[in-house]
Length: 351
Image (cartoon, rainbow, N blue to C red):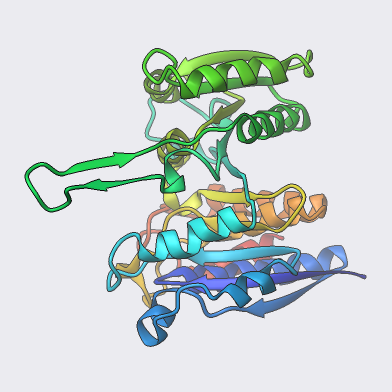
């Protein structure tokens, strides 16, 4: 029996609640498809920081490198100044584990949850491939004369040929694997960001020469947002930089039904990857058993797909879809018609 060693980080707020339901579904899937999941729990997040002053010890990062994957609930605590946990945990894990792809499927399971007029399930089915370790999120820059009326703040976007090339290549390979519209769209801003996206555009089309079976096109980021609302059916795979990817994936979450159904992966194709719901810690719902766990469950399904358990991943996705279509009254916290735990039970039942 194949065994997968998974590092589990419940994290902050409702993170532990949704991860508990995800683990319940993964246990059911492992039993059904004859593999084993060994889980190691890690205490990382706001509570640990407030108690000990530690954010992410170096020894813990080394430990995480030994796992097959990381399953994360959420990071973010209103008692901690914004940026401390996000940079110290999320960004540091992405950078030090070289998780250079942020993978965000945008899939609509039931049109009644889509806010777009006259759009159905067949119209919203695309994936955003976001570069995850460069761009504005590198932290390059600084202050000059801070705290004075002459203060200057500089934030630099770092873009390397190697970083862009491997991101674009992943996007083309993913479009080929998806085997749907077989098109990759570069999302950028070539008319204004004439240095960074000149390199992105040249690299994108250079990589495309190795994929003659995949169509290409380009859209400015503002136009991408417009077309995601007006004609989302145009998209198959979108590849973009760190900042633009962060923005358009939240728009993608809304058109697929909300944060409660949106899952993502931080991918190192040759190392340790991390999978998570993208909705954040939602502290106001902590402990109330009302948060939607489906995004965390979908993230668990993505993790199993990445690990090679494609049948289990497909079964989890089908079970989530059946739960959404046949049972849910809403995808919003407190309005689902079921508790957090009951939604997890429904997915297990359909599985």
